[in-house]
Image 1 (cartoon, rainbow, N blue to C red):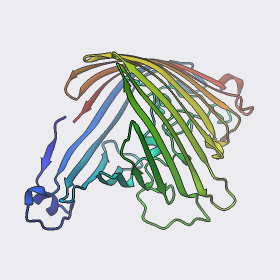
Image 2 (cartoon, rainbow, N blue to C red; image 1 turned 180 degrees about the vertical axis):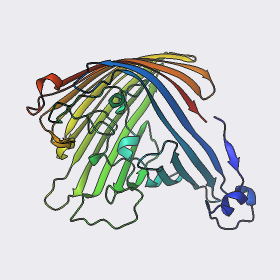
Image 3 (cartoon, rainbow, N blue to C red; image 1 turned 60 degrees about the vertical axis):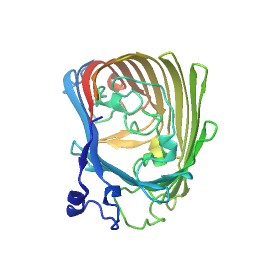
Image 4 (cartoon, rainbow, N blue to C red; image 1 turned 90 degrees about the vertical axis):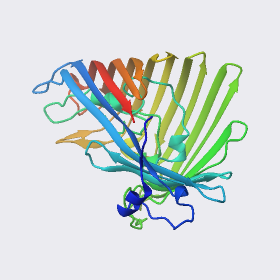
Length: 375
């Protein structure tokens, strides 16, 4: 991966890093610029509704620019920084920003970054668009009936309806502090604390008004036994101080992944409880094979969600389900450049009595090709 080093003088001049003067200028922290970009083009075929036609070609893009740096102090401790700029303007221009402190004691991460529960989770390999990430929602659009009711796709991103990589309340990049132990005999433990669900916010939380004091724990085990590699993970997170009159959401996740001679297989599971409209569970299973620059994967995701919500003038209640199947392939064209594709089929369904029977199920078949570039 090609890195572009920025001189420390320019960094200080730009106000990006302030450091204590040192007799050894070469040891000052420098930043490298990296990141990734993905551009996808796909065709979707699904049933039309009154005034609604989602079949046809579409494009989806994603990208981030990462500014990273680290320095090793005389006492052996390494300090690093990471700032991630969204390449596509959205609700959050700066995605993750955090500092790391690591050494023989393990690693501490402070800032807007995923928790130990999320980072230590294992799930099956998937070489195309993410079946275990909420990406299915970009290629299957449930229709609305005359009253505006529709199947809810909500809680798909970092929540069990569409992903097993989760945290309670789907707080993902909320400001937090995490600690990871050194790995001993294959075992590692991590724990995270977040005052509340806020990101890019230095205000003290009003604990009567919002859920607060999140605790998230992750653990995993990795081991090689002959030619077989095994990874097992488990995670749990909860709110220890719910908003006044509210509940204390809980999140649970498990995963196992095995590999041998280029073949890997895995299963992962996630569950939300006491989370209102986000209450859900999901399971992801898959098999993959890679050899040299090429790889192919087959993946399945099933999610179930209860709860209520709103969409336009309509209401959303009752249970919703999603079933997705993906056949994906990748080909590494060169360092950091990968061509990938997915042939997928997904179905959203609901037993919500408010939804007209003509739109209480949404099936879509899609073929997507994309170029992924890391730099």
